[in-house]
Image: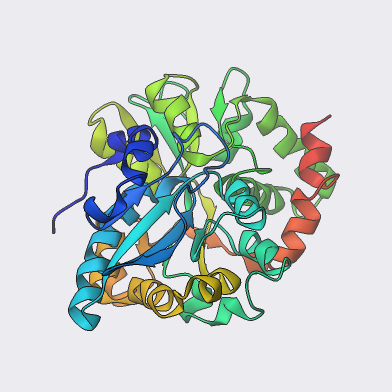
Length: 361
């Protein structure tokens, strides 16, 4: 299987996007209007439309999907033209998941969103841009691929970081993004909280003290997951990056021998979600292609591509073929352990909730 190796290039895509956007019809099957990974949101400059023989749609996504969608957009465009005779152009936007959701609410003309967590899509639904019941529109809670949260450390693991309790040791510098703008950061927080719950038998005061100590050790809290990876890998800051599994594996590929992946004893099943932005596709006349775009994520070809880009395929049979890549035995909690995303957001991430309480102390 051919592995897509574009991780270093992802940082540069935001620079080249401005040049590409003006000439979409001549630029192949995919253009990227992403930011560099350091800011929390990225505006998409080209609206979805049908222009001559090419129809254009916009996918507003989150930070670490850059490489996957760069590859997926190409295979989808080929598939769709073979099936329908219609050529399609996909404009791609990346940033922190929460910031990306807000950009859609504020007018970004997304036809589809492929964000880091269901709650970010629910926020768009609450503005009547996405129809109710979106989470059941596609299989498996509209999560065509999953991931989990791991640690990335420098070669030799000088601080001997093996589990969550090592992140609260004196002198350990942690890199993790901000849950206020990054969906990945929310998964990071919940995984740490669940570990503390198991350690302290549900004693909330001790759990808060533990997670507070962890965030006291955070050296840099970027607005998005890719920005956090850049801080750790490119800028050389911190001892440990709390990362999406796919981000950590990409770093191992791009910098052989420089980093190690550590899987903690407890992590979380992270389910990035996808949805059609109903109001926009109806205005743009792009519903048919938008539905096909998300449905094809479940095809065998796309599922293998997800695995090659270090996302866990939702197809269990295909996932098993990547057992040498992923630790399929890791103990994973799920968002259901927190009462679902609406409850988790209310308890932990809305203004004045537990994250604010521990971080502002």
